[in-house]
Image 1 (cartoon, rainbow, N blue to C red):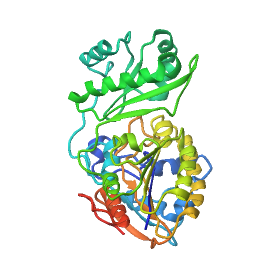
Image 2 (cartoon, rainbow, N blue to C red):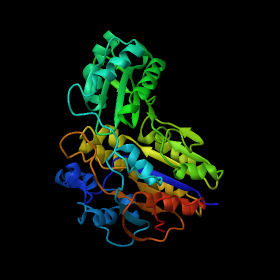
Image 3 (tube, rainbow, N blue to C red):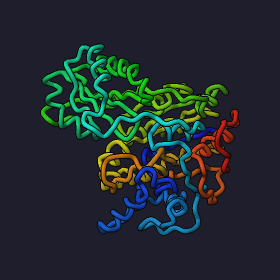
Length: 397
């Protein structure tokens, strides 16, 4: 029986979609601009494994341009293409759910780019329920930056740090030791109930450690997410008696629905270690879904182009180890959930095509073109796993 693997490079877009003007993203091209930056810096991005699978050709199909330094035009080993999003918005949940066969056809609620960002009635209710002395932040912000900005005051006062982003989200950061991890989780559970009237997709607990302006987020993050409105690829696989192994924040994004095993790691390389173990141990018929969050969290939102490039090289260097562990009948896909072009102003996601690069021992190399929905990815995997078809998407293989 075949296995399936989704390797999601969080925010790795391949160029603006036709509707990008609606989002102010007509110039966005996460991959292309990182490659251009590398070339202008006197180096090449150099992703030989991904390039051989068809990344450069997929990006060319999406953007009409060949990324700087990517020269391969034939002899690919994967089936390559790109996909456009049907869902409205450019947020994490919509991208993941659509990949799994459930496009988001409604509009999420978002908090405005004002300071404060959150309605006073919301923060007043949350303060009264939780008993905290108040809140810090209350704005759109990069999580790593706002924690260092307000961390000292938070530790001294006991006031949690609250902030939002381009996603439909309320994030709450607190020190694991001085505030307490269980207390932070309880606060986020209260906030999750309070944001429901605002149609907010997630409340995220962002624990951190450290002292004196030098703080680091920990792997104890937890997302309190609205569940998908209908069954996803994960649900279909679980209903068929398959193992559904969620690595990183995947389980949180799907509100735990359809997941049989949850495995977490602090960063991309730790998650890749876990992925390699699953390549050895995941049973026949299983689905393994990993989100490599550092691309988005550490580099895209922070507009760190060199860091993003380095993280891509790290993943590319480890892919041969994963490919070597694939069994006959296995199918894997490299994809993303949206863009987050580090060369663009601001810190928001960007509306872009995503890669749709399938590979495995039995995959015939070929061009797949441009899919009109991310759901083509999930439908292809459902067909491969011989489980019930999804409500959306087409099998591209």
